[in-house]
Amino acid sequence: MSVSRVLDVVADAAPEIRAGLPERRTKAETENESGEAQLEADLWADDLLYDRLADVDGVNWYGSEERADPLTVGDAEDGVAVAVDPLDGSSNVKSNNPCGTVVGVYDEPLPAPGSSLVAAAFVLYGPITTMTVARDGDVTEYLLEGGERTDLGGVELPENPVVYGFGGRVPDWTEAFEAYVRDVEQELKLRYGGAMIADVNQVLEYGGVFGYPGLQSQAEGKLRACFESMPIAYIVETAGGASSDGTRSLLDLDPDGLHERTPTFVGNESVIEDLEAALSD
Ligand code: AHG
Ligand code: MN
Ligand code: MN
Image: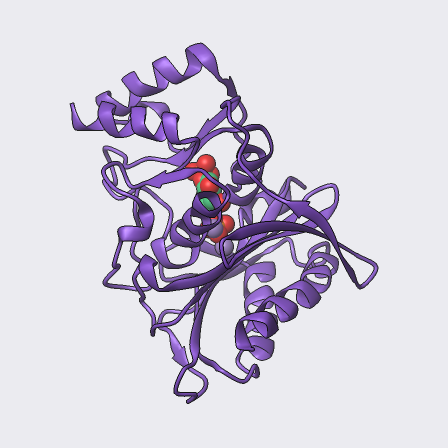
């Protein structure tokens, strides 16, 4: 089945991506579709994933942060589309902080609605390399080590929120969002590392909320729906949490473009409910 093959390919590629980072920490002198400087590591991880995923039977479309348009790579009648952020948080590579890889598997061509996600996964290149997979109503964490994938068990969001992390410069936040954060920080502990995958993974581990809000300078914020926000929302919601763009679940989005951005929030249901209430005031 193509979804299993996609996940296998990502699990096999991840240790290679990690091993290739030390020699690819410099800028590539190119920009991606979002206008961000690309690292050699971004381009290299994208090429590696493209080469392997395009080869999987049943993968019809490949879309990536590092490519302007989705590519048609197959012609199966019941094929899937794979959207990837080859290296999430790649600005952390220079300072040797964690980063990740994000994958969303959709059963519609890209850009696809969140409702067409059939699986999502991320790899976290932290002190150890793990892969977290949401599929068929369950989230499972795996250790990737020595060419082996070891099942570390099911992932469920803890009941009580503990940590929070929000992106964007504070003076660029909206007044309503800043007021919400002032409430959040009364209860929760700040943990922001600048790589969505690492910041989301600690929410899965400890409970809490991660977000990248709409900003005064950029109302849609920074994160892109197809290969960042919706796959992460699928994972967090499947683990028992909630997601929001400020008014509704991120899985209700239907982006017009592969690189369309959206305000992004994931975490415990109670914290996301408070967020939606605060932003609607
Ligand atoms: P990417 O490296 O794929 O472009 O993603 C970067 C994103 C995301 O990982 C993170 O949440 C956010 O950018 C951090 O942005 P700031 O540096 O503005 O905090
Ligand atoms: Mn990213
Ligand atoms: Mn990236």
